[in-house]
Image (cartoon, rainbow, N blue to C red; front, side):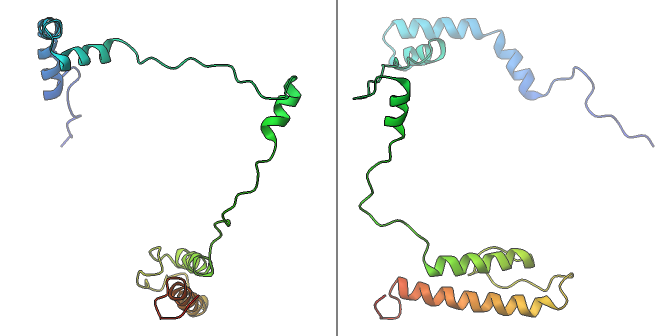
Length: 159
């Protein structure tokens, strides 16, 4: 038996029927909205203004750089290095690095990302390397958890 081809061309769904039914009433709705806005209805006025007038954008003002007369000197002024920051750089700690390395192993084994998620199963393609990768993963997770405990002072010692 032959399957039907779906909706026939030109057939409208409920949303289209509703939209075309409202098109007949749009002029009356707009007139009512305009008279309400003229009468002091603030939400009606706001709706009309938002839909008909574009938002005003600020005008660009020329920027003057001190001691920069030519385009080349302006470029050098803009590209001049900023003074050094006073706060230390945000470098990943040892727990972050080991967790990232463990996640790479998890991705290679097809396990769910995140060292706190349980171990997945043994992939079909893994013959000799599974035990080695799983042992390396467990070692990295242990190192990461130990570093996190030190970092967040969870075992009573100071970092």
